[in-house]
Image: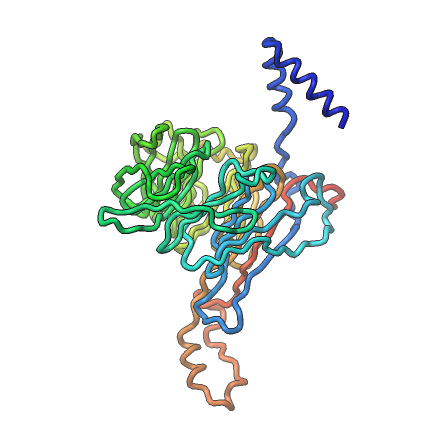
Length: 432
């Protein structure tokens, strides 16, 4: 404690001398260095949590993960579960520092907050300045079916406020996508025909509006740039002003399906995009956006949104897939931000492949401070109509017989895995 006080005293005295400002800034930058990832080429399972339908639930009510995101301060993970609302799961405190042993006991996670939202959650996002030491900053926003954009408290799960978008007939309509601006002062919500900007400090129905030609299905921002993905396979770039107005920069075309997820690299120069039923991740240079810079291969066989993430250091790109495989591109091994051969989509160019789930790996998030990866699995499984008819016509004497006529059909597979798992992706000491 004395060393910290002395260090603070020295820093305050140095601030009075303009000649030492640059040296202080360089010192503060060196206090934290993002850890190495995937250096051991082995992942260690740290914690997991799973969901299963109740015995009285209908067959079509299936709880599976639809997204997971680490909080900006890294203390907890926000998860959306189909037909089960929103869950907040805390990171065990022993993982805040140090490394892990390969034989560490796996923790079973319980949700510290459960918001039982009714209806389909379209999108969700943490407040970018979230800090557990500042309770007023601990919140997230969601947009869901037949509801406005809602802000929730991350300490008790209570509803703080709502942001409502109304159409020309004065009817409230739900947003399809939502995000904060980088400074956290405004909320950008994407609708079918509009982009609407809400002031965070002024909930209600006051908003700025910008008309668009196609639905805004996903959003991402960095500084004053906004990228908007749409079901019509295009991505639009806008320059945002402080007043909430938008100036169109241009459009990018290249996906074969509706765009479901987009994200800027930390330096703001590249944009990564993924689409439904499209086995490609497209890498764009926003300065020359007419043509993709690179194409990375993954497996996406459904219309489900399959998330990907970029490490805070900007060195690693990680994505899930409907085959349960997590793929990693390392800048030191594969230059995923420079062209390899964008015409050869079948070529496998990932640095690492990890078979982490037996079901669809639809969501993942890299911890902002620690070498920890959160992955979520699950998808909707259809019931085999032939088996349902046969089961309903069976006599009581035939109930012990097993129908194997459709065994192995993946379309009607019952091999469902609905889990949230934390993985250690950093250095692993004493590994053999």
